[in-house]
View 1 (spheres, helix red, strand yellow):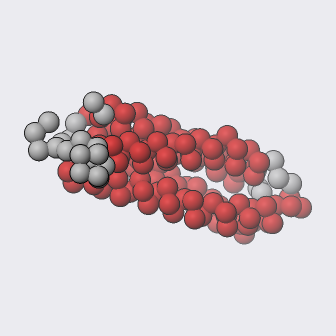
View 2 (cartoon, rainbow, N blue to C red; view 1 turned 60 degrees about the horizontal axis):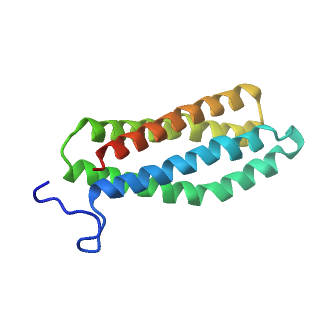
Length: 149
């Protein structure tokens, strides 16, 4: 493509490959949360809940900041520099779905769980929000993969 640099030509990663890297990182993180972190969290009894949930929150917040920060920067760069192809729209829509589910459902539910304990309806809400985030992360990765030639 004219005027578009490929990865490595000047030591920088182009926007397409940065988006691919960020969505892959995000999808891997999200799948780990879905397959490892949340099953362990939802299996925690009421007696241990406060300590386990607090430890989970302390450990995961820095990782969330890193992963979501990279995703937002890569999406912003892609939006600003790449043509609006179906693949880019798919990647951005998936990322927006995942970030939106986190901001509007998962994060508030974690706050309620921290205050109220492991109520079944809150755990179900958290797992549903997580499923939406995972779907969004995988959609974003599929879109980013489609944009790589």
